[in-house]
Length: 198
Length: 198
DNA sequence: GTCTATAAAAGGATAGAC
DNA sequence: GTCTATCCTTTTATAGAC
Image (tube, rainbow over all chains, first blue to last red; front, top):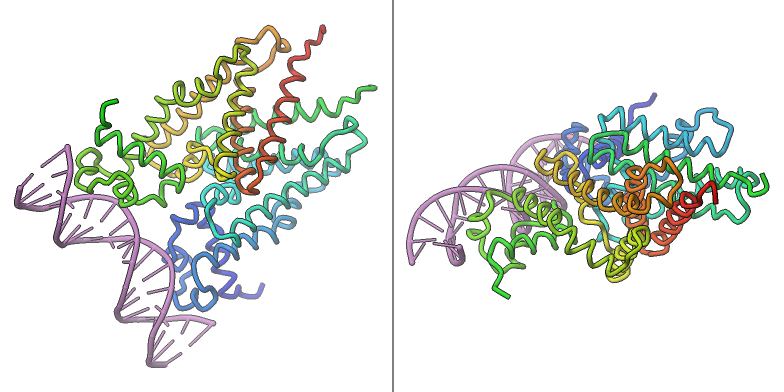
């Protein structure tokens, strides 16, 4: 593997630091320390800190397929099960981080609500792409759902369950809060899968 | 009404600022500016900034009944409708703030996850009190729910729907994201209210 | 209990040599 | 493209008079 270029190193370090500490609590010095670079290098590639954030959000956008969806789905063929495989992937992250995991987009979205439009648009875009992927799963199983099921609303609801579950699991330091939320969603989906003409 | 004492002024100003800007982005100077006090006064009552935060979280804890639940419920007698009245109260806050509203506890919980235990415990306590109040609503209507309904899980799920809806509505600057989440919850609850022996 | 002044540190960003 | 040195601002917190 070719050595990573400086810009990539910065984006990857910032991605991890923003995820762990948030944007405001991550200093330029933190990023330089982790990358073993000097401030001249960072400011050569980025006009300022916010531009690093934008690059990070673009990296999440570009990484959703290879970094999130494909690892989460594995070879799972059933589209509905793919949704729960995705939620299971988040569960793994929660457990592996001793219940300190936070969705990087969700956390940044709450932290940076009064941010520059360039930032807000990318946060919204990241959410929208996640919801689109989940909606597509549900739509692939459309024939199994009750007629008239609103797949967009169901996909947004799935994101809500993930974000709310992550938030409560982290606050209480107990993955059971996440699990109960997913179980409720499972029950909800199961009820929508019960054909009225069954 | 008696003039507010200095400590109360500080807590109320900090409550609003932390809600609007977050904890990290609110400076002591911000609090002093809004209260027209000097730093000597603040540090007379609080050892440091984090102690102001703790006082704010205690104020939310003490205010849940008079400031949130009673205004939200109004005279609503039906316990299940009280839950949706509460969600409707949040909807009003979202609309009144042009979709910039964020739940203060949820936002702080995501921002401050690596915080001092004194802070984390109070965040968890605030969530727990909210969930307890909602669970109590559902339990009051226990006879109308399917046997075996898990009211604790349903109340946590209600918090999840609120937090996830607030997060998405704010990120997209569109209250419809909140509304669709609440509609999904309503459908979920309605399905649990359909007695199998109906 | 409140005032002014200020210490001490951290933060974002820049300059100019190499 | 990277280096060192540094400027300027903001921020938390303290000191000591009143």
